[in-house]
Image (cartoon, rainbow, N blue to C red; front, side):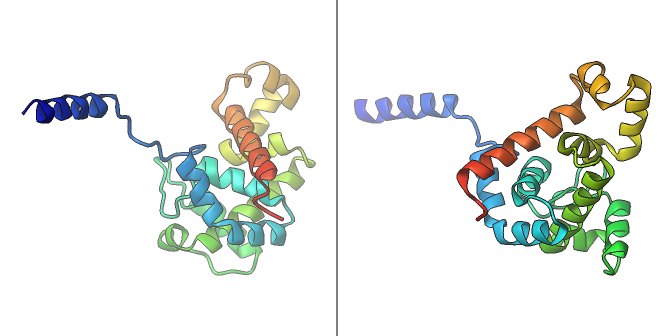
Length: 187
């Protein structure tokens, strides 16, 4: 009887201190999911001419490596693409415009479109990866407005943008990309 009571107390204490496994970006589970998509991430990134580790960082931070994710703002899939952006990239790549269902269920297409969009942003931002990632997160039009108001990206990043979500996003993606590079996820 005492043993049963003891086990009940120990179990209750263990349950009280238990915290659920986070499944978002930067977690062990998120990293495992991204690693599970390594082949399609590498293929999409190389086709677009961008670093696979950068695309893996985007996938991790955007969706935690989950395929069927929809954000509260309407971004869809692995790379969390807005439907209009996905349609634009699809047309540029000579693909049919995907519907929401396809963006949520076809990780290869989503990664291809996300890589294409990031490649375009890198070109538009003269190869400045941090700036391109801010634009990926906030939109290039919003970034341009912030830069104009602040007197350039560096002034925005050091001033009003220093504590912003988009700049924090960019830095998290860069940090995760570096971790993927260190881990040797892509040859």
